[in-house]
Image (cartoon, rainbow over all chains, first blue to last red; front, side):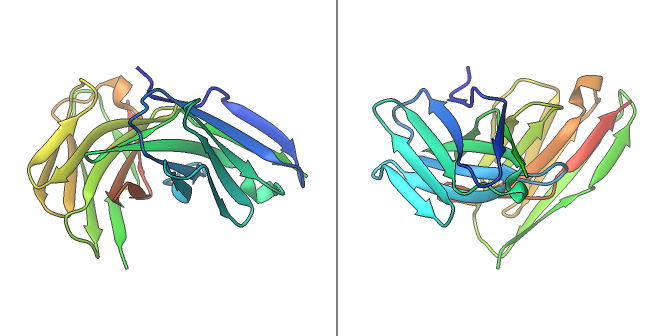
Length: 111
Length: 110
């Protein structure tokens, strides 16, 4: 049972345009969400997070939006750069120590 | 500052052999600790997590086990490896939900 879902396995975007990565979750009790970026053969690195008391959090080119009623969050990257090409994972922290990841979306930013 | 060490970086093991992967964390106390596996072309699958010494929660039935003998040490083991155990294994620690990952171990079972 996949509690955190990233339904798009891949996304291709032109350099300078916006990248939008989507994530859905099933449990309305989840209250903290994170986005990670991963390069091949490396561990994921933290990008940005959002608490359920907010609907938006921004850090430079990265913005995360949370729609609690739809159980949906998205990561916007503006403007996209070739160095942003990586696999992006969203994750949910329901408390109690467990941290659940989605399947990942591979972003390719073309020059 | 906090650091996480995971070793070895790569490992090739025959089917039926034992496995021991070790992870240690420095610079923090009582972290939550995790083992994840990323199979080829797949997402991050949570295998085990621990909220304290000797406390292990298993997420997926399998022939792997985990132990936490010390506060900042997390070990992933198997008595007999299967071909399907091949993958990229990641250790992580977290405090209040935000996780930090090690560099991973590429395990190939042959």
